[in-house]
Image (tube, rainbow, N blue to C red; front, side, top):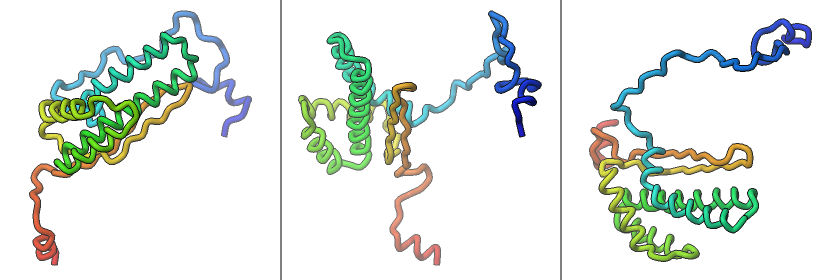
Length: 182
């Protein structure tokens, strides 16, 4: 257990009250680790590149608000709202493209009901085309999207996804699975 007396003798974060010299650089590895070029992109990276057009539009709106001298706290909140809205629209279209035509029609209806929804059909068609071009084999259904925001750290996001068509698994009738298990 530490005490104020023992902290003075320790080396590290909580001990040693002596100031560090100017120009002090903490020890770091001399060589950076080599990342293999064949590394697969994460689902989050795929989602950001899929939603890139929506995120650029959100950034243009934020820049307009910044030009109108919106206070910083309101500007941060607007940035969070617009970014989260853009990602939600992208996730809706991504999931609809995996689930089929009925889900695409439902997404058109839901996104079309949003305020300031202009050119929804063109937007959804563009996103569906982008999904087919860039991620044709991606069958991950996004089940959870969290975007916490704080004044201090800004925003980040976390997603959860489920592969609805795993490689090597074929669709089978439930009765076949019951016979094998029994």
